[in-house]
Length: 210
Image 1 (cartoon, rainbow, N blue to C red):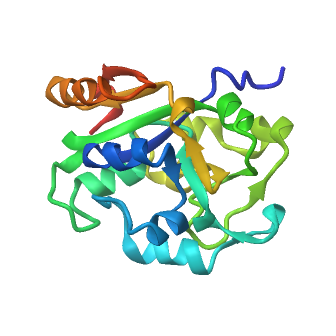
Image 2 (image 1 turned 180 degrees about the horizontal axis):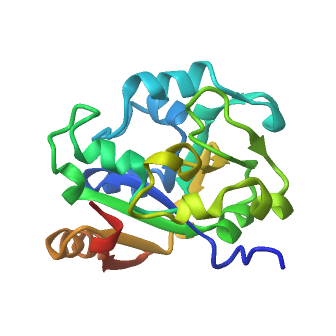
């Protein structure tokens, strides 16, 4: 049976400080467009990997465009990248996951946006993973046991970091949920959303964090 795309969630992680810019832009921007617009208010990833995604790693099945021209999503919360960021590996202070949000959508929503999309069987910024644009092969091309592994993911780190990539932009009104580390951050997000027309459901999901 084909995978239920409506119930296959996608997760984009960002700092709470970036919500103002995201909503002002109408949604998420690819790294390439973010750089052109002055960059995010608070970056959480490795700068050198972002550069590689924008200038080196290309996607053959998407017109040979760079990975950095796409908005990235993981297929799981509590990603290995979040672990690295929280440990201080990207230059932010250890414990910084408290202010990081999981913006939630689904594969069905992502396809419905209408932009070009692909998915990768590993970290799209690594040494050329395989990319696919056949949605009917989503089950067979990705390692779902690795993606869903929570405790001992180190041996399957590459497979767990599979990504779904949407070209250029991702509209804010296609984000339907926001997962937060703690209630204080959830309250801050809820308060901010009072001034925004589209208001995703805000929840505390401590199990999505380390």
